[in-house]
Image 1 (cartoon, rainbow, N blue to C red):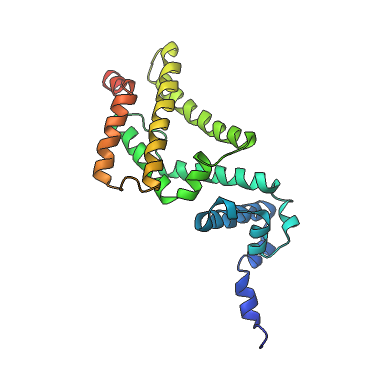
Image 2 (cartoon, rainbow, N blue to C red):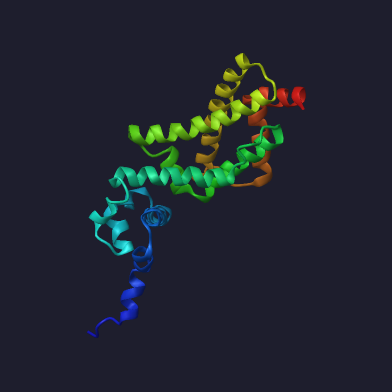
Length: 215
């Protein structure tokens, strides 16, 4: 059997050259990038330190310098997921139409990144990962709180509004997204928008009410 050419050996590890030139923060980003690619194509059960290291072209123990093992890798992917979801969803929107647009973006994110979405919201997680997810929700709730406060809504009313809106809306949206990912219901932009309108109106009645009062 003829030996492999140098070109074949290089192409087998396309990330190695990038790794060798990278700074520590860049190496960590590369680890997450490779893990995300594996998650996207194969699912969370295939995302392991050993497999990520193999694709980069380094030893598995090398990755522990940059990331806190298997759990740290999974937590980093969850953080990456919230970053991507934040890029899709307009967190600053508070008007009824914008809430619906934000919800639509949430569904689009879930359908476009099903394995990542399932890791974030459907895969069994340990306490560290759950705390990480809660930290992202806390940030989102604070943005909603600050917006209502800036609108002059009495402080004693804001807490209940934020808790009810964030909890009820997320429960409904997660169910909707899960059904779309599982293809139990088809993706139809026009019908989805009508459903979202009904969800926001039913579960978050204070949102349109506040808009009419404060605009």
